[in-house]
Image (tube, rainbow, N blue to C red; front, top):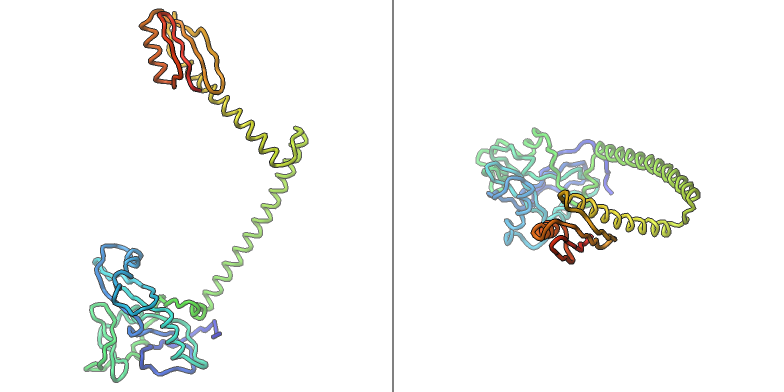
Length: 312
């Protein structure tokens, strides 16, 4: 495996005719020859939303393979979309960097050379140009080759945008990132151990308290038996709660001085209630009022009485 901790590296512009390297440590800047780029207008505002559409934008225009996508906002609803094949790039790196040559990071020229505003010579046969925000390598030299790619790279500061290439990601992890990650893991594990110890202590206290209650109230020792008792008591509580709610609702029925309840039988499913009223019209009105507030299972109305059977 290549050295994981290279502190300094040379920016190296990799193109199809670059000279293979056998010594040194490099931050590789990929020529547009190794990926596909488009500038498009999309009906979205965020780069994340645009990335979801990238595959459909490139559909039918890429060679067969598995592609990943990057998105660069370009303003006014425009985005620069990059499509790249991780495996092919990794293979190319293995071809150009051999023996003792080490790759510290891999980057897109689209990011690293975004500030390029003039024709830049790559070699005697090609140049890098910025065409409306798109970095393109063209198969001809600049008419006035004042700027060469090696000189341009010496004058820029690398961005934070690195290409993720699977197993190669391990190689491009710098020492500071590794130390931060290791420290975070140590802190997390320490916190987890302390929390686990506290949990075990509290669990032991709860088990001791549970044992005291079991002995005090002569309860069965197993969780299954305790759950059975709990479920039975809960069902009893639910039945009693329904009865109380029904009684409370019946107590809210407005009755005059000459009206009163003459019968009430109630259980956990039904309640039978009879009322004494002064006349037949009041009996009908009271029956309608009861029907609005309760589910009537049965009812009878007389000249001076109302009797209903309601669901609890």
